[in-house]
Image (cartoon, rainbow, N blue to C red; front, side, top):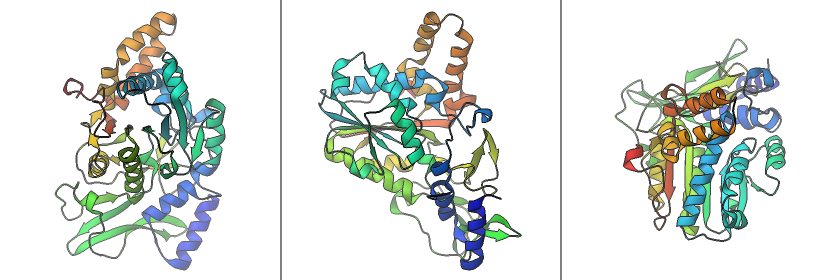
Length: 364
């Protein structure tokens, strides 16, 4: 039994069930025992200590293409100098390091950029500093500098806590975490009125009795902060995560440990807890802030529109003997049965920004 599980069982015994959102927040961000506070979650295999791998860790091609996308957009937005390049939840710093390396072909971009990371984990900050030593760190995007800003968020929103509600005949039941025989378990709480924000309510499909709706106030707040910053200072955001591109209901709460799915209640603090991202909600929040939102596209189609296959061919010519590895990396990033379809891409921008590349109709 993990130390955090012992603590939560004691708290539930004394105070009653806790909401699913509170459980996720404690499991991920408890100052002493939280998953992101004590573990280094990234790794190609469970054997090297990692629990999952993100696209930048799969292949340098991912960051290189995003870097080219950013450099192109910066050129077309009249090359503001200085400008803020901010990453939400930058992991080990791999994505930003690849972005900056790719953008070195444009010296003016490199001279103008100021890198800012939004990261709360001290352990991850230390790792990021090794790859991107000149970055500035923030606990929230609310403290980003007042200048034109390009924001990148890759697998950021999926790690923010959610709260589930089940539709009942006479209202909504919040999903809570309770204790049964020294085990944590999910249960329906007391019925109440619809607890959703106006933004989420506007993005819901028809809901029937028994359906589960996932609310994510921290996701909404983070998106609102980012959107308001861009609306005030100019720029754009590129958001990549796994989730749904159309309004949807259902239970997406899950846990990963050692690259395998596991019981999200079994070992709080030792497993990564996530939920699918509601991309229509993110787009809606951006539009309410006055931004324009490009059509939501699948990651595979977006990367192919940016030249993934061409870049793979170039790398194979430059690296004889690695052809199979590079093909495998490209497949994992873009194939429908891999990251290609599960992961979605949303681009939002200030109303005065040029059109965002990769979101044209032929890329959809």
